[in-house]
Length: 126
Image (cartoon, rainbow, N blue to C red; front, side, top):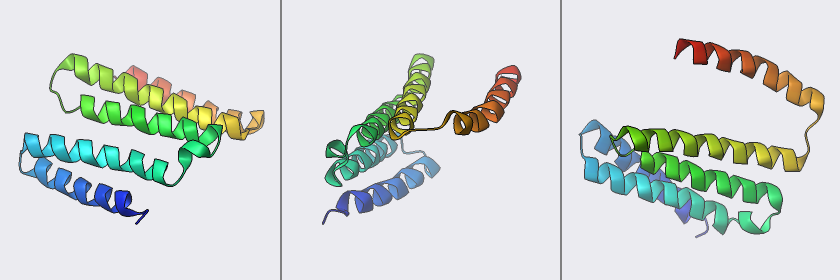
């Protein structure tokens, strides 16, 4: 029974894909909201909130990702930008989870150096 939210998330994601393919905006909104809610509920059912700082950062990231997903339902540019900010903050929360678990400076450098170059290239392209 504890895996029911995961199953619900998978089913609602399938409905979302069908709604996208068939231009059904109301179905898209309902299924996207339900799927995003289900993965947050699943994390909580599995005890993420009681698991310490790192899982709490991840739950925060999931919540912010949900905000980003829901903002992208709108065609309004302000909502799109708000969604991007929410996704950025979600990734900051995921980094917070890794930091609380401990990370060596050398491992961080190995990851950040290529990502910084890639991000710069994407920024120039955009």
